[in-house]
Length: 168
Image (tube, rainbow, N blue to C red):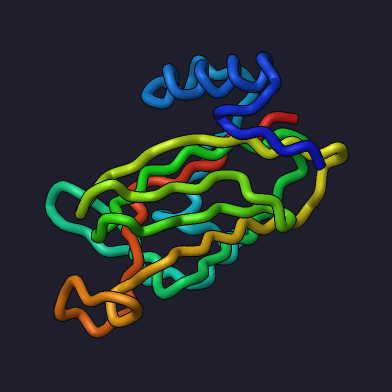
C-alpha cells in the first residue's frame, strides 16, 4: 500500500484532494467517483463498531463515537479511496488518530472545547482490495479520563460527516 494524506508528497493526490474539497457540494462534477455517507447512513456492506446509532435534531444529524476505539470496515473494489470527515470534539486536547493497515493516516488534536474539525485523506492501494478497515483511536471520552456531560455513555466525539469517494 502507498498511503497519502492531504499533506502528502504526491502533487497529483494533493491536487485531487483540493478538487474534492472544492466540489463537495457539487458531486456531479467529480468524474467517475462514487459518494457514500458511510457513518451517518450506514449501508449493509459497511460495518461500524464503536459508534452509537444516528441521532438528530431539527437542523442536524450526527453519530457519537463511543470509547477509545472505533472501526469502519468497508468494501471497495477501487484502488483509490478518498475520505472526508467532519467531527465535533467536546474537550480540548483530545487526540484522534486515524489508521489504515497499522499506518497513521492523520492525527487530530482539538485546541478548544466543542471544536469542529474537518479534513480529508486518500488511501491508494497497489491493487484493489475487497475488504478494508479504518481504525480510529480517541484519547479521551466521557466517563473515561474526563466527564463533560451527564450522559452515561462513553461519548468521545460526534461524527457530523464521513464520506467515502472511490475511483478505479
